[in-house]
Image (cartoon, rainbow, N blue to C red; front, top):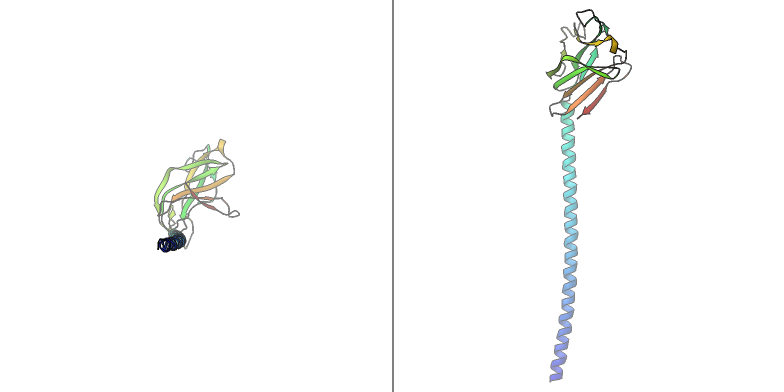
Amino acid sequence: MDLVASIATAAATVVLAVLAYLQIRAGQAQAKEARAQSDAALAIAHEQAAAALTVARETREAAERQWQPRVFAHAWHGPVPGDGNNAAPDEMAVRYYLSNEGTGPAFNVEHGVDVAGTPHTWENRQWRTMRAGEAIPPIPDPVRQPVPDSPLVIGVRLTDWEEDIMYWTRFENLLGERFEVRNPPDATAPAQFRRVP
């Protein structure tokens, strides 16, 4: 009887060991499957976050295109020697006007000219706002004449004068982003539009 009990105990131990082994393997398989599901869920979450960022970026870019100002400083009949009214007699009077040719308002508009790479700014430097389509000085009759009757003027000393001129503006859009437009005096070269810090 002891022998039968020993054999039964040994058999039961083997069966329990096999069951324990099978349970361990099943637990490992479940853990592996849970990790795979977790990794898949994480990958889906990353894809959804990336898609949401793409939608947000595209929405912002669409809003920016819809409300983007583009303020140009245009030459106004070219520079002339100063006569005491437009600039001092020892200066060149660089004449220009501003126009917002974008689709939205511009804020904190700075403007001026670079002569041979040296910046010169208009004495009052900045306009707080410019509506889309607005010109400074105003254009009294756009149908008759597409430029203002009078210009903004910057006096550049004759000792600093060179024909290398670039008109420029810096301004902000509705989102507070800052931009610069650099516009050559002639239409042979394109204006440069860029975001600035």
